[in-house]
Length: 239
View 1: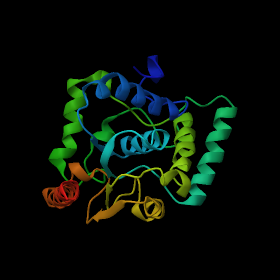
View 2 (view 1 turned 90 degrees about the vertical axis):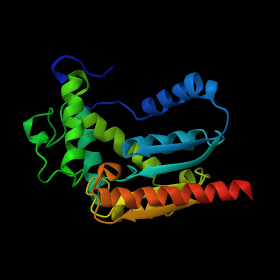
View 3 (view 1 turned 180 degrees about the horizontal axis):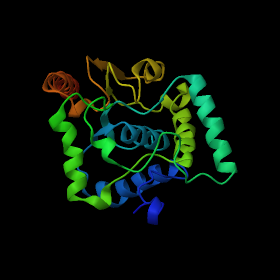
C-alpha cells in the first residue's frame, strides 16, 4: 500500500528509491524468475524506466536480452534547477516537512481532469483513460509528490547520470522521448542517454511525455521503431 495514510494517502512519497529497486528485485526473484524460460525484454516508462535502469545497474548479470524505455526519468530539468531543488528538499527534510507536498503539488483534483494544456498527451480520448481508471478504482488515486520524494528522486537520478554506472547497461536499449516532453525533456536527458553503450536514442516528433498514450500518428511512429528494434534483435540472434 502507500507509505503515507489518512489524509496524506494520495501523496506520492518514498524515503529512498532503493526501496523501489529492492521491491523490483523481490518481484523478479519471487515471481518472474520462477517462470522465466529465456531472456527478458524490459519495457518501462518514465519513473518505471528509471527504476529498471537502477535495477539493471545493481544486477548487471541478470538475464535481460534488451530494454525499451519511453521518456526515462534521468533528469527533470537543467543542472542548476536540480541543484536548487536538491538543496530546498534537503532543507525541508531537515525541518520536518518531508511528507508535505513539494511546491505546486496537491491532491488529485478537478484541475487535473482538464485536458487543455496537460503535459502528457495530445489525445483527449487516451487522456480520459486515467480519469476512467480512477473512477473505477478510487483507492488508486495518487496526487503530487512530497519533498522527500523529490529529494529521493534527485539522488536516484544522480546515479543514472554517470558513465561508470550507465556502462553497466550492456544490453541493447531503445529509448523514445517526445520532442515536446516537458516532464523529462530530451535536451536534458540526451547527454546521459548518449553514455549508454548500446542505446538507440530516438525522438518521437510532436509527442509529449506519455509517448504510448499519444495520438495515432505518434504511436505509429513509436510502434514502427519498436518493430524495427525487435526485428534487428531477432536477426542478430539468428545470425
